Image (cartoon, rainbow, N blue to C red; front, side, top):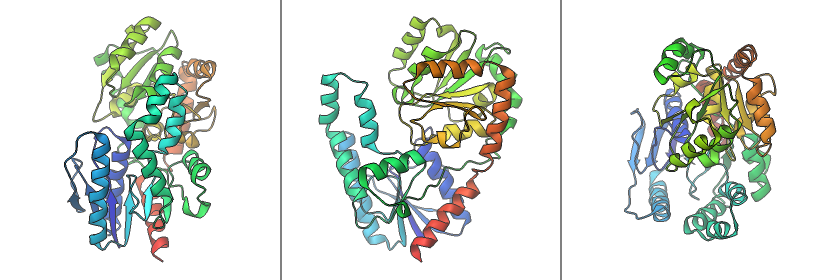
Length: 370
């Protein structure tokens, strides 16, 4: 079986890139001939082939249009059995909707903005191009399946494009249980000491780049007076969030750690994971945190909420319900409850390892080729 996977670039802190990295490793073990079509890939090397498409560009709209044309030219000449894309290109047989729907995010984003900013959002050349590319992708006669990474993504695609169930398989992300497991807690005290966090305080962890979409402002505003917060990730407006924490009076209990290539030590130091996102198609960090034994607090706008049983392995609330977020964080300040829910979360995560994901993917490929 000769498969091409299209992903424009590698960001070591990106969830989509980590998924591709894991999928490549899993597919290689299944004796599938894999070719990665990419502009730039600095991830781990493997036995897969790499075809580089790096046309000149200025600005992100030109960047995406140029790569789409170049990648589709490679596909035309490649002789692949199946082409799976993680970018919005119409020359694929399978699209993995790892970024959800751009139009669904824009609808949520518009609700946060005033009239002028909403108009600018609608008129943005990049947004207009992305919406057009999204429409061309989902209406392409070549498209045979869309891998949905959550029930939320599947519902949105059906709502906007009317694809039937048979073309919308759900394949949840997979993790390596040898990497993410409760054993990361062995360094709990050491990590806390290095960050100046007292050993006995409730410690929440937030992981994500792009603070507005992922709801860091909500986490800061709801942080209990007795608790501390670690923020792992990057955002060009980080100073704005530091200032918010200062206005809220909790800056001394918040540690901004920037982007980190390995987050396991922070999962191990924390008592619970908070991710009050405004839009997240799945969120690898949800599954990673659960596998490391952390209960998760997130919103109904997060696809990873599929994995959470309310009050058993974490809490899910409407993103606009600040009182619910405050209540859930307060409940997890009880170490006994946090520990109990964290153990349940780890048991759930065991069912989502890389092998399960790979079997689902290979089964999908075989079904389409048959």
